[in-house]
Amino acid sequence: MAQKMIIDTDTASDDAVALVLALTDARVDVLAITVVSGNVPLDMGVQNALYTLEQCGSSVPVHLGADRPLIREHVFAHNVHGADGMGDIGLPLTGRTPADGHAVDRIIELARQHPGEITLVTLGPLTNIALALRKAPDIAGLFHRVVMMAGTGDHTGNVTPTAEFNIYVDPDAADIVFTSGMPLEMVGWDVSRNDATITPADSARLAATGPLGEFCTSIQRQLVEFCRDVTHIDGFDLPDPVTVAVAIDPTIGTRSIDAYVRVETTGTQTLGMTVVDHLGVTRQPANTKVVLAADRERFVEMLLTACAG
Ligand code: RIB
Ligand code: CA
Image (cartoon, helix red, strand yellow):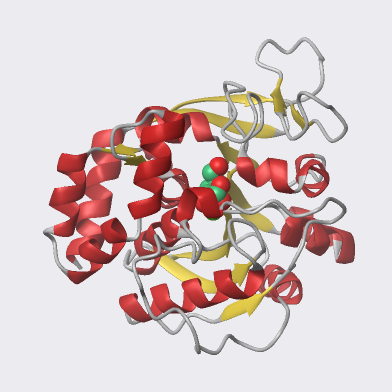
C-alpha cells in the first residue's frame, strides 16, 4: 500500500525537485499539495507548484494557504532561487488554476479522514501547520509522521549564523509546531549542506536522464550562484528533496537523535534558531527525531530514478 502524503511547500527550485521525487515514486500517494508563502509570495508558489505538477503529468490538487507569517514581516528568498523562484530561466509560470478550499482546511479534513495514516511533509515556513493546529488541535495526534525540512541540527544557519530560512521566516509558527506533540522528524539544513549536495557531474547525469532531469537541474541556475558565493558549495544542495527522500525511505537518514527542540522567537542574535538539546541538559522529554546525516549516494540514485521516469 502506497503511503499517504500531504506536502506543504513554498515552491521554489529545490521544492520543485522534492515534488518530482514524491510524485514519481510508486511508494507514495500524494493526497494534496498545500502552499505557504516563503521563498516566494504565495501566488508565485502556487503557480510554481502547478507548473511542476504539469511536468510530472500529475493532477494532485494544489491549495492556497497562508500568504504571510503569523506575526512577523515577510522575508523572501529571491536572492537564492531567483525573482520567479525557479531560476529565472524564462519558464511560463502563470495562468494555472489551483484547487478550491484553503490549505489549512484541507490539511484538517484529510487528517481526520485518514487518522494515523498520513505522512505530512513540510518544505517551507510552518505557518499553515500552526494555523491548522490552532483551528483543530485534535489533528496533532492524527498524523503517522511529520517530516520537516526545518532548522539545523548543528545550529549552523543559512539566513543568520544560527537560523535556517523556513524557521526564520515564521519562528512563532515553528514553535507552535515543536510544542504541539506531533510525531516530528526534523531534517535540518546541516543534512543538506553535508549530504545532499549535487556536484556539477551529478547535475550533468541528472540532466541527461531526459526532460524531467533537465527541468530539475536548469531551475537551479540562481541557487548555483548562491551556493558559489554564500554557502561555498560546489554545485547546489537540495534540502527539500532530501527531506522527501527521508519521508519516503527513512533509512536514507543514516544518523539521528531523539531530542528536545524549541525555537527562539525573541532573540536578537539567535531569532529563528532551532535549539536542539543534544545533551539533555533541559531534562525535558524529546519532542523531535533530529536527522543528522543522510546517505548521499542513495539520495542521488533516488533523484536519477525519479528523473528517468
Ligand atoms: O533553508 C532551506 C529551505 O528554505 C528550503 O526549504 C528552501 O526551499 C527554502 O524554503
Ligand atoms: Ca522550501
